[in-house]
Length: 56
Ligand SMILES: [Zn+2]
Image 1 (spheres, rainbow, N blue to C red):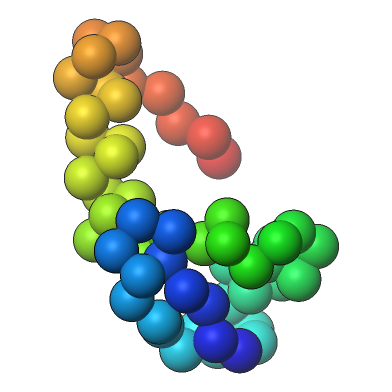
Image 2 (cartoon, protein in one colour; image 1 turned 90 degrees about the vertical axis):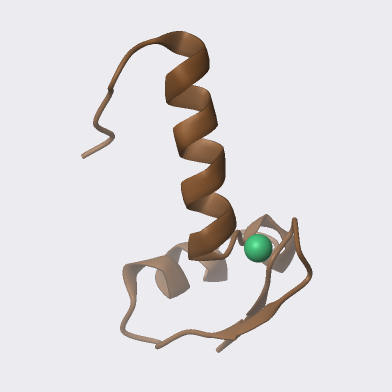
């Protein structure tokens, strides 16, 4: 499936087997964030909060 990054408007092709694709099917397409932007955001969030939390 195709997913458009919310932040940089890049369109990525992601595998239907990807857990991310399964998640996106249940949510609006515009919630997708490409790995590059996601990494930037998560690093920024960690720096701000000063904690390292795992969502797993
Ligand atoms: Zn992006």
